[in-house]
Length: 122
Image (cartoon, rainbow, N blue to C red; front, side, top):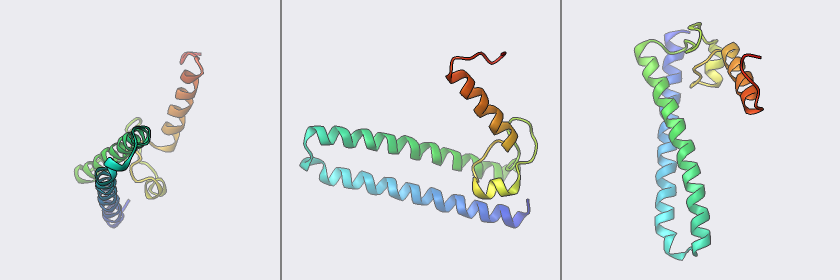
């Protein structure tokens, strides 16, 4: 992948991170402003939604930070499992990818087997 592609991906990742952080700040401000007007059931439901949003947002930000660190240290675009280059098209679509398609598919098959109660040695 060319340096210009890395630069575009880095800019896209930084923009996405900024957007996520600003959305999270917006939802926090709205919750704080309208907290007194919510009854306890609605408030509890809202807290559950906020927690889920926060977890998903934090995981996404963590993935973005990992990708940015890898761009800076030169390891971006290498599969964490097999060490092969992740195809540039995959990185364009999914810039936080850490696995090549083959390794990702193997991991998903393994997880599916485990979730069904199977053994990984079968």
